[in-house]
Every structure is written in structure tokens, then in C-alpha cells.
Image (cartoon, rainbow, N blue to C red; front, side, top):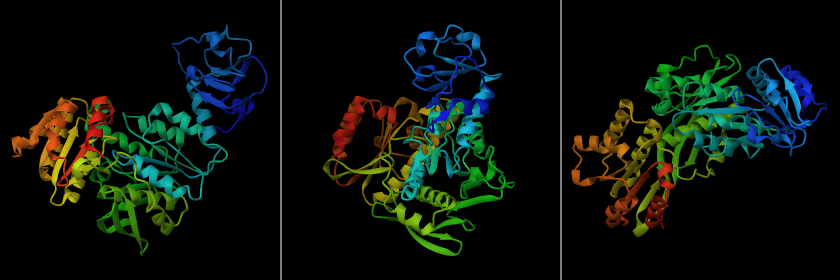
Length: 465
């Protein structure tokens, strides 16, 4: 965080000191009482929880901003108490003030799948020239937004943030913090039905990506090939809309896409110029990630040729369609970091496209954020259709919640002797063991929360070298 004097903050949030004195340097801001520390400013946003006075005693220069000063009448003598009329209004005034202290390129990325990889690509490209701040791995939950915002300081030259959708309003909340001038929408598919309830509500929530975007100066980067984006998002009022994809008319168009050693090769067409691109990581979806990253870094001021060259040295994100050597010479595709319908369908396509004559084995688990509604069952059935379409030779359906995958595959005609419904890692290994040889390629698409269990950790150790 950029250190700020209290008096500078008071002028921005219309706060009045009613207890204590001085003008301490603020080194941290929080709205979570347990996060209080030295030189911390606490926005007390909890209306129903009183704070014990001893919480502040061991810290230097604590400051509390509140619209309920009566809650703090017994606070320690060293606490500076600031009164505001409305705590929520004061908090968001501070957020806007802090964000506007930095005139740097800020890129926000959303999409049902591909956020982490695209964010990492953008970061990799930019950090050759800039000090880049970003969200960490896939840790993009709303509770971290303030922490990530305050991670911008005087040395930061660019920032890139993942902005997910767990429920309606979730994306708007992230935008309020980060205020990205450059925004990417990778795709819109179905996920997070537990909180969004219906596919329509989830998809509509993704269109919040344009919330507050300046129609003249803001940049929105869109996947031109995504049917749901075309159907749901009206960008006619925006002057700086950039399309990427495979189709003609894209500002950033991929042509002659092919699988190469360890990744994808394609030609990028932009403004009548052609650039050769190699991006580590398999799958045509990864080409979309690369196109979006190049479009974003170009929008931030980098040359396209430089961005393309930087992508070639990108380190693929762990457990994102990561190819590993397996026992007996088999190939393992570890795609266990996240499990959503779109990513599962993409991983099955990769399995088919790289398998050649090998036996295709898929271990498919449940998708935690789908829940158990009829809408969720429909998504599992669609994956079953994808299993049949991609000609999987051996299917393991892991966890009871995912059973509709196997049921649909059987309904479509998959051999019942080739479909296994399993709940334990030991059961899987017993059946899988005879297939651990050079003639097999195995896709692991089981949720991370299952894979971190001891039994599944051991399964992974048993099948990987």
C-alpha cells in the first residue's frame, strides 16, 4: 500500500475526528477487525458486532472510521475515532480515491474459463518492461479485492486482475475496486449455479463486465466466436471494442492453428500484418487465451511482435491441461485445478486431438459450483454427450454427483463395460492399473478439492512418474 497521512484520507471521506489526535501515517486499511495492526485504518462496516477495546491496545496509531461511534465509547485512549455520516459511502469514497492515485494500465479479466491462464499470460508479457501487480493464481474471491487493490503502490507500473462471477453483483463489486480501463471477456458458459440459481442469471451476471466502463476511453476485448457474448452483451455504445477469435473480421484473428510440440502454433492477423505465434499448452481454447492476452498488452502500449515473442517463453499454469509422464509410459493430462462444464468439454477435445491411436481414458469428477438442480443435471448430461462425441475409450465417473455423465454416455451407446462409477481412489486404481502403459493417455478432470484428499494424492503418485 502507498502510505497516506490520515488527514489526506479524512478530506476524501468527509470524516471528522471525535476522539484522539494526531496525523499518523496509515500503512494498512481494512474492514475486518481481526486484520487490525500497527498504523491501520479500520472501516467499521459491521453493524451488528461490537469491538472489544483490548483489540487495539497492542497496536500503534490505530484509527477507526464509523457511523456508530457509540460502539467505541470505551475504546483505548490511543485509538483515533473518526465519525462519518454513512460508513458504506465513506468506504467506497476511499476505494475510489486510492485507485485514482495511480494512473497506470489496469486490466480486468473475466470469463467462465481461462481467466487464470490469460492473466498469467498478460503478466508474463508485461513484466519484461513493467513492475506488474496481479491476483495470485486463481485466488480471486471477493474478500480479497481490497487487499489486491492496496497491493498497488508507487512502484507498480501495471496491474492485471481476475474478476470472477459467483453470484449476481460479484463482478460489479470487483470493478468498483479495480476500475480497469481495459477489460476482457473470454467466454460465457454455464457455471456457479449454486448462487446464480439459473444459467440465465449466471450468464447475465457476466455482462456486468461493462459496468462503469467509459464509453469513449474504456477498452472492451471480446471473444467474437462466443455465441452467448453475441446474444447477451450489447456494446454498441462503446467506441473502443476489440474482437479476437478465429472468424473473419476479428481485430486479432488466429489462422492456420495447429498442434505443435508442447503447445499451439498459429498465425495472428492484425491490421493487415501477420505474426507467427507459439503458445505453450494444448487446446484451441488456449489460442483464445493467447489472442486475448496479446490484444490486452497491445492496448496497454506494447508492440504485437514483442508480445508474440514473449508468449513463447510462457510457463504453463500447473494443473491446467498439464501433460505429465505416467507409470508404464502412459501419458497423464492433469487438468484438476478447476472443473467447469466448458473446461471439461475443452479437455475432452484435447484428449481426442492428441491421442492418436492410444487408448483414451477420462476420469471425470463432479463440478462443485453446479449444485444439484435440474439445470446442473443438464450440464452433466451434456458432458456425457461430449464423452461419446470425443470417442473416449474408458470412462471413470468420480463421485455420485457426476453420475449423469456416465448415464448419458451409456444412453448414447457407450459400452457398459467401459464405464465405471467410482467414489474411492483405491477403486479407481484397481481398475486403472492394467491400462498404465505406453498405449494409454489419461485425462484427470477431478475437482481440486477432491484431488487434495490423501487418498487421491496417493492415486496421483501411483500413476505419475
